Length: 291
Length: 280
Image (cartoon, rainbow over all chains, first blue to last red; front, side, top):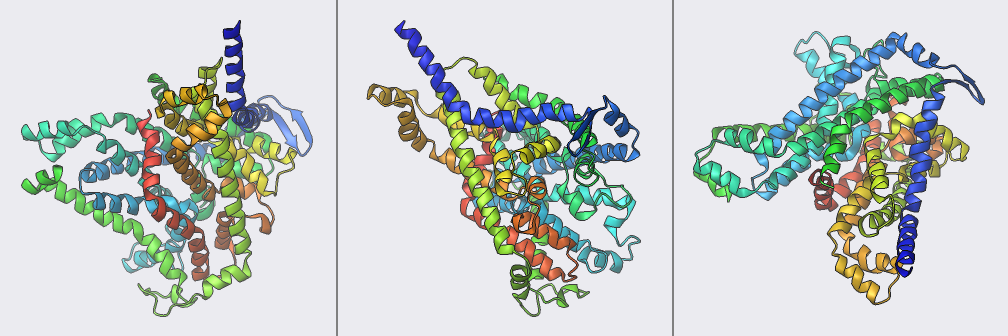
């Protein structure tokens, strides 16, 4: 009896400790997800809501701009994630075993753009790429490059956005890789050295296989981060020229806060929700495997 | 140890890759150099082509213009308030929950924890429409509290701090129990002080994240006076004022606090972020 009381008490204490976080979760995460699914089935006009079934989804799949936004988002995800993982592996594997000062210089110089945020970096890049008086446009003019307004041209706008996003955010992946590589047992390198392995052998045969969990983690968090790419689009192109750089998140934002199409915007949100959920399965599985 | 090795046998690939990496690191810092020096140029020098690589005359007038023609001081205060209060609330709620998940036994613990952590992978932005409507119903649109509360609901802190609680020895808790300390006292006086490094890391990481948040603050802070620094400064880009030096000064104002935090807490940073990777 006493034991049971004790257990009951410990149960209650546990619940009380998680209560604040749990309530916030219900209100600001669980409820919005359910409400989002519901809204996606309604036509919303201010206070008036009319059930329309799957109409919002049908509207979406008849809108070429929505397809353009999916296409662009996929392009961004694929290229930015590959560049980020590849370059971060290249940097981390070259510097992780150098002296501490050098490592923190490299880490710092790639991480500072992450710190000062996408908003600030977008403003600088917006200035650098400004067709009238930007440094890059000036350089393009001097070198007789045919395209001066790189953001205003359909063929160059995507590569430029990919580069800017990659250059701003790669620091995080570099930090994660360096931390993970520093943790690799030293005797493995010693053994490789005895065998006369070259630096590249060490990188490809020891480092890359051993940091695989980090690679999965970086890949998943970057896919999800790029999936909701918004700031750089809003600040540099506004989705243009002629919708050629519109992304899913930008499309969602415009429908919700510019065109007041809350039902359609919710439907985009629901689609994005399921995509992220699906993509995060490998990471979640890895996180719970050792529990 | 490996130092010796590289001295012994200079690998060509090693030299080649590190040269490229240093070059790129400097190139990567160039936009920030350009931001900073441009903000100190006068309105005609900043448009000069070919450009002045170093300002020929220095002026702080762009900064005073940012603070006089825009409520930039108010924006800064808003950002400090939003980032500060969000972070305090996150630390409070997450440390309590993390303590329970790590040290207490209760029914459904595992399931609730999985549910918490799964939410880490879903970005809030995709639920922005329902989230906005809830905030509206709570009367918190165009209020700083509307920017704060939804962001307190994050599992990141729970996940991070649970790791720290897990490595704190159980014996400490049992000793406190024997001394007759209740659960709340054990938590506040015995375990919280032990996980201080974790709390420090969470505080800084969360503060930076909220400071740099954009989309949610953009839709919630509608009046000019209710904007945060990031959102306010971003509006300078659309400002009709053609003076780019003035826009760059605004961006610098938004960036400087984060640069200071980075320099001061670099260690916290690199370790704090790395925890996510070590944990999988």
